[in-house]
Length: 112
Image (tube, rainbow, N blue to C red; front, side, top):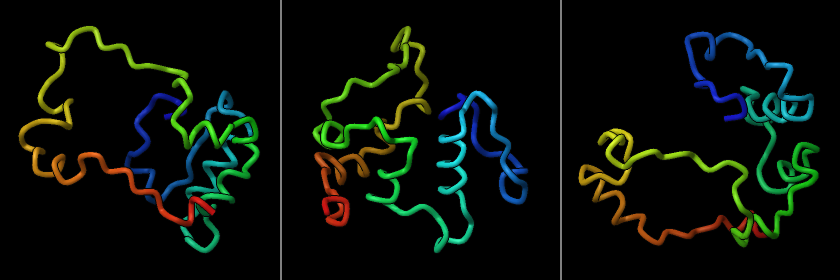
């Protein structure tokens, strides 16, 4: 997401990721900590992630209230340009969507 490139290829599983210089040290450090193979060493959820320097300017109260405007909105030129595979809300997925409709569960540990 940070570079606009697909994140996975054959080297992803066994190789070491390469980070473009344009990402900056804080974002590279965040990604490295999130990608640690040993789950015990991996950056955790809630406080640990939120406390990372990359998110120092993030207003988490506004995030939780969904009050922030996204920095980038994808440009959709035409609904006709979308293929069935581009739309997760197709009839093929109707059963899944019905199950998840109005889903708003938040893990209690995220509210500590």
